[in-house]
Image (cartoon, rainbow, N blue to C red):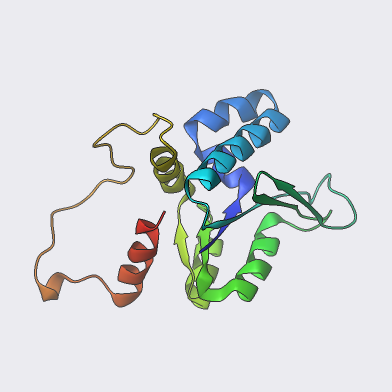
Length: 169
């Protein structure tokens, strides 16, 4: 599985990272990369690519870097991270899992057959997987409705596939 992460979206949706980002943008990015590197050590079979916006202050070309197994892409000046993620999604197809709360990216993932997870939900799942202690036992990131039973209450096939991929996180 290849996780395509909208970097600033995840930083601003995570309670822990949001405070760092408010003080210093660079500190927020570094904290996110440290957290993703820890997650990568726990799940070495997942490819992680985090994309940051460089559209206002970026260079004339797209910049790529690697930090402890986490691929980093800074979009070029005039290009948003969403556009880079869409381009990567087209190439990866159903192998990809998009981490973003951006509805447009979620719809694009659905169109190419990829799964998606909101930034807040990924923050919860990755904290739990890495054993960082932020996620408490029994705590759920999203409220659940009444339990559904029987085939008449079965989720659509596309949603069942998405949830199956999320279990691998």
